[in-house]
Length: 466
Ligand code: GDP
Image 1 (tube, rainbow, N blue to C red):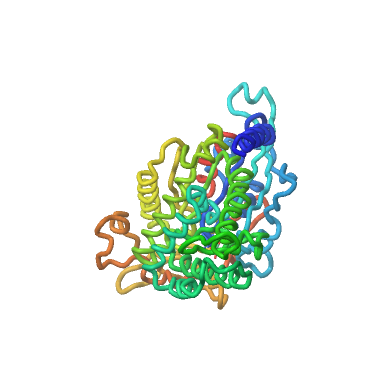
Image 2: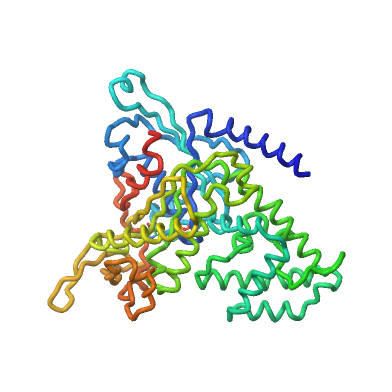
């Protein structure tokens, strides 16, 4: 079995090398992050701004005037859903502007550039075509890599131990206590347990915990209701024909039929990666949420660590992601006077994640961006002073209002260092009520969507290829 699998994987690698990357002029950019991090908004705005380029001066090829044209093309992968760019852009810029539907599965889009190389020779050589394949995928699915290292028994033991400490796991643990793993397999019982386990994972996500795998339980894509998604951890695995044994079989099926294909077909082919994180939301929620975000970033980053998993290392065959950008999104909630502090916090989280994941290799960077800028800057009297705030249109009432989110600490260690549980609260002013609609994105033809540092992010990710 293993030998055959090795042959199959080598063939897949050669196939991938031919289809994308090694021998042609295409670059694959992965976009990930947990649910609600801002993937859909990021891709929609990136594509709109690369098509128009009026606000992309931070991209060297644009400021050099070397991009002759950019256009959407059919993607090379016929069986992967296309990223619904037109629908998402219409949501943002239509007559009733609203945020688009979020990422639920893998999607892809190809953008192509006609670009002239720099320098005297480049001018003589004429234009070439560079393809950019953008791959949108849930960060939850990346966290499943840890499952590949574990047997059903190990996974169950680790998870049940962690659950014992968590109040919101009690409903599932009670259901499990009433279940005999040695009883004959019963589909109704299996479905009840899986549903209860899914509720637990939903509660873990709501609490900001990173151990929300199996990731497909929360974001099933087209696998909802299938046996590979109808299992739960068990105290022991039981004998042949038992419920426990069937759960183990399904856990293994999840690994081989769901996790491995995702890493083989999508992850293994990525050249550049952006990881989006809702850092401001975590800061507002408090030090525990920031600590959990830090752990999630460590987990996500370690998926890119060469040698992290033997199977994956074999599959990659030495190929590695060259650049990874960690971006704190939604920076338009803050006046620009605080953006440097947000960047410093993201950089500190990244440094911590690199240390913990023992990560080396790819070039990494941290940034604060807003893929879509839904606010303008404003000032508001506060006592005898003026407060730097942002003004936007509230999503629920449609009314304009100016808000002050609250302060970020000058030193990020106040949030992630050992003394983080001190009295200070951050972003504790208006942040909680700042639900802006994407209104008034002032879109003149050729301009692109308003953003903050999206062009700088693009320069880091793809600038050298243009
Ligand atoms: P996904 O689950 O990662 O695809 O996340 P989305 O792209 O759907 O973004 C989730 C939500 O975050 C959106 O519905 C917006 O409310 C908000 N959001 C995302 N990006 C931005 C941004 O650049 N600025 C602002 N103000 N809000 C954003």
